[in-house]
Amino acid sequence: MDSHRAMPDVPRPVVEFVAHLLAAHRQAIGTRRGARVLGPFRQAVFILCWFRDHTCVHCLARDAGISQATGYRYLHEGIDVLAARAPDLAEILEHCLREGVPFVILDGTLVHCDRVAGETERGTDLWYSIRIKHFAGNVQFLAAPDGTPLWVSDVEPGSTHDLSAAHLHALPALYPAAVQGLPTLADIAYLGAGAGIHVPFREHPDLPGDLSLNNQTYNKLLRGLRFPGERAMAVLKQRWRTLQHITLSPNRIGAITQAALVLNNAWQ
Image (cartoon, rainbow, N blue to C red; front, top):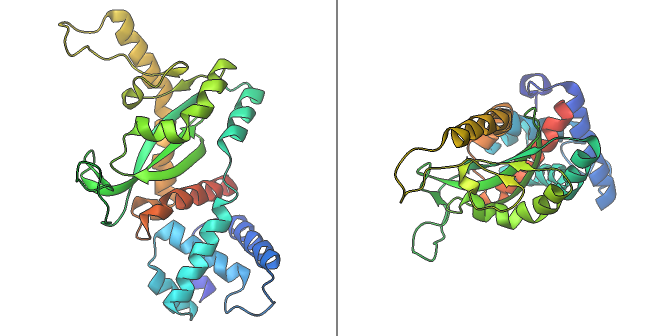
């Protein structure tokens, strides 16, 4: 691989950070020095090109002088090494409580993927999201009040509702945090999430009339507080463009998003 032509537009410390992780991983699994075509630094460049520019693995492998199969193996190894360093939800909440963070923002994002087999109990496509009319994976995430992404969950199929995905991955930890003084702000998709999860009011479908002025004011305030957090995943997807459409197995979307979060933290 021509390191000058293929170098992604990321700060060099980020490349060195990934290379260091890969070198430590190789040492941990007993890889002999010189046993691989690409050293840790060139493998890091390979991985970051895929994350940053969404370059096809075949093209990256060709430029690196390795087979496509080896390219995929290097990529998946890098994803796993990075995802293993993704912050744990309990650790994030403990840190927020310790630092006096006033609240966290919970939201879900749909990451586009290729069509994949699988059906729901109703016979519809498991990974198809009616909301965006595309195959996708549902990932839950937390953001700080200033919009900094803090945590991302494992993936659920695109047909999964945000509230259902949150019950699986986030709410069991968010409830105790709320009791300790760290509330969660969320949008209308999390209506009925429970105590400590603050969501907007909505008009009752069976009752006439608009929301009261107090409830309208509450919704505006909540929307203003949530806005930076809801932009967090959009910013993450823009920086790490592979998140805009995953061509690997959709079951890898969670690990890929977690790896992107680790890269994002290293960039900061």
